[in-house]
Image (cartoon, rainbow, N blue to C red; front, side):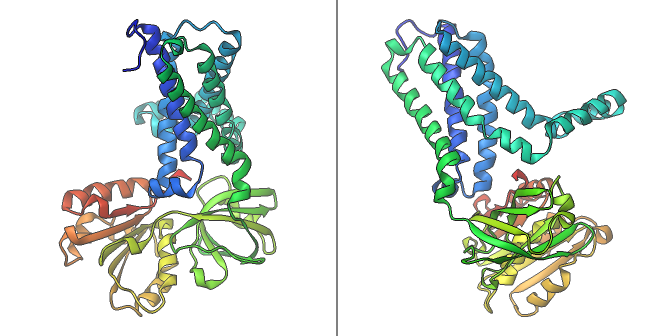
Length: 416
């Protein structure tokens, strides 16, 4: 409605795509700010992070029609900033894509790539060059600088602003908000958000792939709600590491326990890198995975290491459980937590535990779950944590069975 009088020219559409790109990338900077209000709006920082990734990807893609169609800007400074912003964002997007290329490309194409030895060797070399998550995260923090470059480029080179003040001011507001949130996250958030000093008290292998680390507070400890996670910084043999972990202990324990499965660069060697006495820092708690949000009739579903928030829930029970709960815990072997879970459940008549060893009885299914519960699906609240594909299947099938979508809660720990 605020477009210039000369109509929808190709150049105007190109500049519009550029403005939309700045809008989406500014939204992405807001979403990843870790502010409590953003987490509350998006029902958890994990969901905000997923939205961050999606809108940022679309924002980068919109740069293509912007570059192809836009014309009219002749500022040398603006042009240079536009190139810097586009190239920088493109490189960061490619860097984010490469570690996940197997999950993005069709399976047939993936097999074809892996069958060619020279290509497979090239992929491995690229992986070594890019490094692990820590290096990617450090470079990814420059995203805001490239967004700022694109934003200023738009101010200098958008030819429509002279005839459409409403567009100029809306663009200014959008860009300024994105820049402000980026500056807050990079420069000021560390002084606003509380961090707590700890030291490693014990490192205990649970089984071949799971390790439990106990952290002792050095002063005031973190206050959290059972089921939440936090960013944990630990100084290991090879330096400091940063990783989000679910807090699997009860808040009343005084110590913090994190239960870790070997899944990535750092966690695969955690028991070798971390020893008793090493310093640690825990950031503020995040997440809204809270059983108190559910109805009186609940189903808990855990798969593998997805049991960690439920361990915190179970360990936090103080003699009363107001809800009737069926807890389904599926693993591909006998769970090392089975005895502890059974012992806790023995004290609560309203808590029934179903331990599923998929190597013996097969995979847990929605049919199995609903057949074990004498309750209409419409009255259930379902809390889930586990592998993404497993949860997506359960979510779709539970909704089809009549469980209201608003009563299905899941923790998206894969974003970490």
